[in-house]
Image (tube, rainbow over all chains, first blue to last red; front, side, top):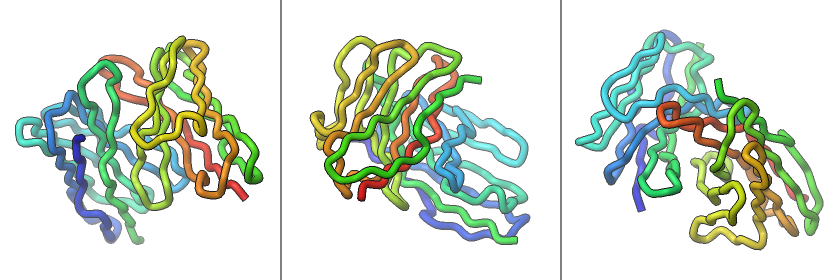
Length: 110
Length: 115
């Protein structure tokens, strides 16, 4: 099956720093989403980005589907950005299953 | 926006008992819902796809008789962990696709502890 790998697995930042999280996938996908899982486990949808670039405040994402990767940029990080970031890809077929990446654990220190 | 409500948020049960987790789409109809399991410090693993009015489709390695899924209406899917054991302790999350261009929305999850 498809492999979805994220890097780095762990990241520690000082408040105010910028970071780039990467998501590589091993096969063609129909769509890609980025999620933030907060400390209580809630998954928050950040971007629905099958291709191209989107921006939302301090966050932006770029997906290059032909090269099978996506990037999530976090600028001017805040302590509330801490948590786990997942990318997830939708593979084809009737069920439209969403397969999650390995995750990046981000800790932003004050 | 689309909301998926999941209950209970946490539950503690004794070994051998069964636990039911509910997942409701509040402002949209979900013909398909998905159930995931997440162990500590790991990613979300898809367990099964729940289809309204038909049998669920389970991923390889997931025991159908242990994890019973029912999707009786367009707004409700349930996951019942039968004869629970400590190794079933995990975080269970449901999800529904909200439309062609809006991706997927997730419930808040259920933390199950089997003692």
